Image (cartoon, rainbow, N blue to C red; front, side, top):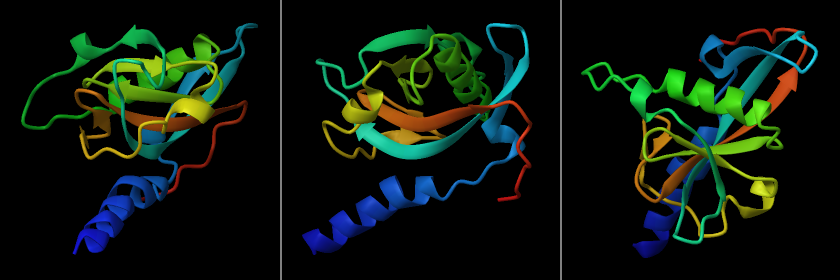
Length: 149
């Protein structure tokens, strides 16, 4: 029974988030250091445990004030701002969203994000307390073609 639980946990927390395709909600436009328009695309990697000795060590943006706690809760704006600010802060390719709006990353994010294992403490694309919903991002100069979910 425990093996089945672990398999279900891996499918829902790791495999399903990887199947998210590019949509207008996963693309944000920004400017590069020369003022040229660039596009930041991002995709969910999964939900991961964090601890006091942080997996992602730099909180570089706090988007909690942007959250509109309504029946139609939408985390898209918070996630987009985390992606854009990760790019602006030059964090290489990954960021995590914790506590519904804190954006975390560091120069070793690719090696560190899963150091404490998978978590189930994420919802709406955001990590809750002591959990990072982790995203991988890349920057391109031409707007990617959106795909429907």
